[in-house]
Amino acid sequence: MSVFGLSFGVVAAEQGLSVVEASALSLLVFAGGSQFAAVGLAGNPVAGVVAGLLLNTRLAAFGVLAAPFLGGTGWRRFAGSHLVVDETVALALEHEDREEARATFFFTGILLFVCWNVVTVVGAAVGDVLGDPTTIGLDGAFPAVFVALLAPRLVRADARRAAAGGAAIALALTPLVPAGIPVLAASAAVLLAGRRGGES
Amino acid sequence: MSWVAIAALAVGTYALKASGPILLGDRPLPPRLGRLAELLPAALLAALIAVSVAAGDRRLVLDARLAGFVAAAAAVWLRASFLLVVLAGCGATALARALG
Image (cartoon, rainbow over all chains, first blue to last red; front, side):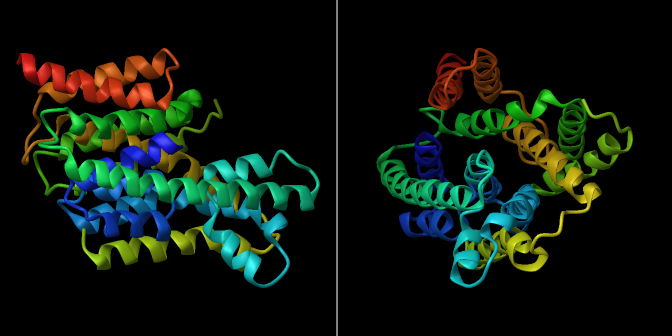
């Protein structure tokens, strides 16, 4: 997680974001994959934001899983919602007891939130002083990060079909439409991958 | 990146995260939506890989980034840590560029 945040800070700086802008993303969005997507598609900000949000639709599903132990009233539900990310919910769900789940969720959530934001600042500061990003291969960080995020999802056959379809659509459309649109159009791959059914 | 874009991503992401705990309460998500939310990241991440490896200005380009992708994929295949995957991606890209 800390390396992930560090790389986010570095590539954000290399894409021309200030330390304040990179930090704002980490503080206010707090969802790493979408932050990478938005920064990576910086040439087309609207597509970047939409791709980030589509990527985050899975957090709505995690939010639903977290609802029982975030339940109750007041500030905990609102503050807790911000901490809904893959890691916090997955760890909390290992506890059957609601109070334990809630405690684990907030403990890991606050820890991750603090780490993520500290390393973003460090990464962005480092990125600012590094020279031309292409000479040290920093543009290679984007595919590497996305590969690392994608790989664990490929255990399911329908996810593999969605990934293959998404990549094919994006490549086919790249020469035809403005930057950013091919990634958004790749969402259509889930309709094909989903329709054929088959759970693994 | 503009502040409008940052704000839009922040507000939208919070709405997605909070929709369960605040709107739905204890009710389960419709299974169809749940499945869609699982498959979308796979399609989008693969598209982001494709574009970050091969997209040029309105055309497909094969260059040093391909070497970085292959190295990163190999590192993931070998179950390397996240740090090594990113270093492999950057290192191979820089090396291929220096050689080519």
